[in-house]
Amino acid sequence: MKTMLNSALKSAVVALSLLCLPVVAHAQDALESITKAGVLKVAVPQDFPPFGSVGPDMKPRGYDIDMAELIAKGLGVKTELVPVTSANRIPYLTTGKVDLVISSLGKNPDREKVIDFSLPYAPFYNGVFGPEGLSISGPEQLAGKVVGVTRGSIEDLELTKVAPATADVKRYEDNNGTISAFLSGQVELVATGNVVAAAILEKNPPKKPLLKFLIKNSPNYVGINKGETALTEKVNAIITAARADGSLDAISKTWLGAPLPASF
Amino acid sequence: MAYQFDFSSLSGYGDLLAKGAGLTVSLTVVGGLAGVAIGIAGAWARSRPVPVLAPVVAAYVEVIRNTPFLVQLFFLFFGLPALGIKLGEFQAAALAMVVNLGAYSTEIIRAGVQSIPRGQIEAAMSLAMTPLQIFRHVVLIPALKKIWPALSSQVVIVMLGSSVCSQIAAEELTFAANFIQSRNFRAFEVYFVVTALYLALSILLRWLLSRLGQALFERRRHG
Image (cartoon, rainbow over all chains, first blue to last red; front, side, top):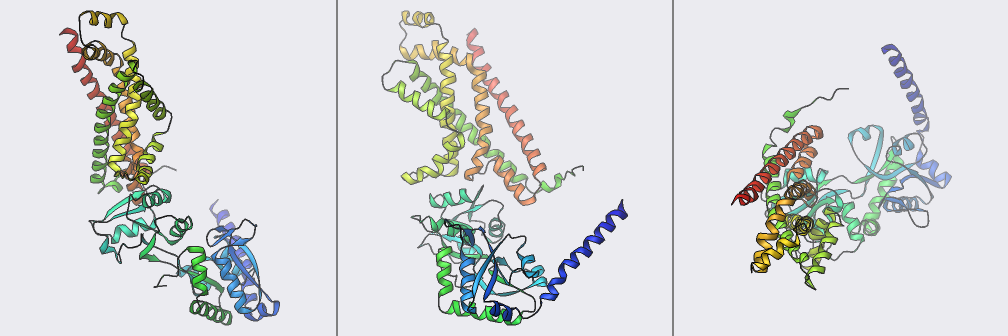
C-alpha cells in the first residue's frame, strides 16, 4: 500500500514538472511580444469587490480592472481581461495564459520564489478607523476609548497586541455587527480592513470611518513572470507616473472611497 | 480518527470564563426579577376589563412573543441609538431579557389567574376585601403556586437565551467561549466546558426556584 502511494506520488511529481516546462519555454521577452500582439492579457478577479466584480452590464469592473486599463494604456495596447480565482491566478501567469496578474495579489516569500512583483499599486491594509474630528494617531491614544472589532479577525489579534489595557475593545460576531456598532455610535472607533471601510463609505453614512492609523499593511502588487525585467521596469514606470499625476489616487477614490494613504 | 482532547489549552482562560458566567448570572437575576414583576403587572392588567390598558398589554405580549429574541436585542442595541437612546451592552441585554420574560410570564401568570374559580373571588368580595387585597391574596398567590413550574422553566429558558447577548459584545459565558475559541482554536474543549457550566447553572437555578416556590407557597397553606 505504501509503495503504491509512493509511486503515485512520484508520477504526480513527474506530471507536475512536465506541466511546469512551458514556463521555461515562455521565457522570452514578454514586453516585446505584448507590443507586437497589441494585446495585454491580464488576470483579474471577478468575485472580489471592489477590486474585481461583474457589473450590472455583465462586464468586469473594479480597482484591478481600472489598473489593467491604465497599464495597457501606458503600453499603448488593448486589454484582454481573463477572470481568475485566487487559487489559480499564479498558475495562469506561470503557464503563460496571461502576461500580468492584477488580482489583489499580496507579496510573500513563497510567492516571490515563483514570480516577480511590481511596485505596489493598491492599498490593502487594516487599521483603526474613526469619525472626522477624533484625533488618534497611534495605538497608545486608544486609552479610554471604545473600539469595535470583529472577533477572531486579523485586526482583533493585532489590535489586542498593541492596544493599551485601558482601551475598551468590543468584539462583535461578524463585520456587520462591527459596522452597525460604529454607525449606531455604540463604539467610537473600529479596527477593520480598508475594504470593509470602503464598503461602509459606499453607503454614504452620516458617520464616515476615516483612517486614524495603520495596524498592518499588505498592499497589492502586479504579478509578473520571473526574468521579465523589461516588462517589470515598464510596469513600474507606469505605476510611478500614475502616482505622480494623481490617476492612481483617482482609482483609489473611485473604488475604495479614500485616497491612497500617506504611508503607501 | 480519534480526537485528541487537550483541556490544557484552556488554562489561563479561567478568569474569562468565570467573568462570563458571572455576567450570565447577573443578567439572569435582573431579567428574572424584573421580568416576573412585569409579568405580574401584565397579568393583573389583562385580567381586568380596563379599556386602554388591557389591549396595550395584549399588543406588547403578542409583539414580543412573535418576534425573535435576537431581533429584539438588535432593535434595542443598534436601533435605539438612532432615536438618541444609547444603551450599553449590559443595559441593552438586561432590558431585552426583562422585556422578553415580561411578555412570556404575563401569559403564564394570566393562565394561573384565569384558573382561580369565580366563586373564590366572590367569597373574598363578600368579605369586603379591597380589589388589591383580593388580587394579592385570593388570586395572585394561588395562581403563582399553580404555574410556578412553568414560570421556573421560562426563567431558565431566558437564562439560556442570554447566550445570544454575545452578539452585541456583552461578555457573558458564550462570549467567553467564542473568544477563547477564536484564540486557541480548540472549539470542542471550550464548548464542552461551557456546556457543562450552563448545565450546572440551569440545575442550580431550577433548584433555587423550586426552593423559593416551597418557601413562598407551602408555608401559606398551613398558615
